[in-house]
Length: 296
Image 1 (cartoon, rainbow, N blue to C red):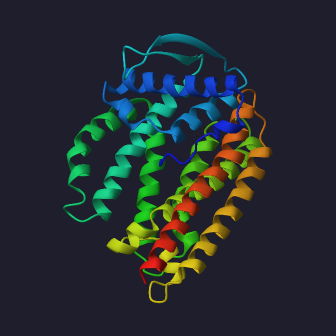
Image 2 (image 1 turned 45 degrees about the vertical axis):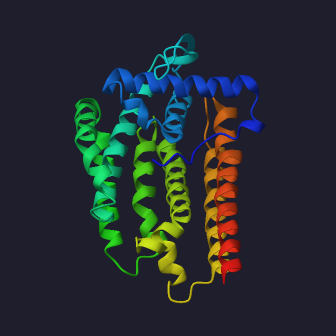
């Protein structure tokens, strides 16, 4: 998970944003409770969204808000939520499992010096992951399969954008299916997870363009646009095109789902939040492109 799935606050009602923050703080508490005092450091917007979607798709789910001290700052008061289901537990497990496999992926992809930090943190992440395995071995299997498929895809020097994104698409598709109660729901949730995974992967690839170009890291967009004759304007146009195409399918999949709760928050994140994230990342690429042009 990368932290790209976040709400667009200007378009949210105050009560909606406060509820979102309560889920965020509730997940922070769950991470601390299940995996120790340092686990909240890996809290992300993505896993907060997962907790919200998990609860929203459950007909029997209910949420209560409570006041308490902030886990990270005991002098600060905050609102946090409690669910009558295991939605926060699932999101916390996904947080530590995805963090563990992200570290392994970084160690594999980065040079020795650049991967030292990941190697230092990995033993702690492994302890968290082993704890999550006790209840959520099926989730760990999903992420493990994804990493193996990603490794195989990246070994191909001519790997296409679709081929590179497929493991992330499949991973979130399989994860979303776990919330389904019928075959019909499985198909709908699977499609939503598929395009959510594709959007996250492509957004991360666009965000990492300069870093991967500079350090020779794998990036399917660089493969597609050819590093030999790189035209910045054409690359930016291509990035905008593939992100917009994926976002359209993601929004359509979201609109086909029935939510028992949190619908305005989910629609804000998927419709306005993803759009704002894209705009922010593409604007940073355009500014960098202008600076490079000025230097030449």
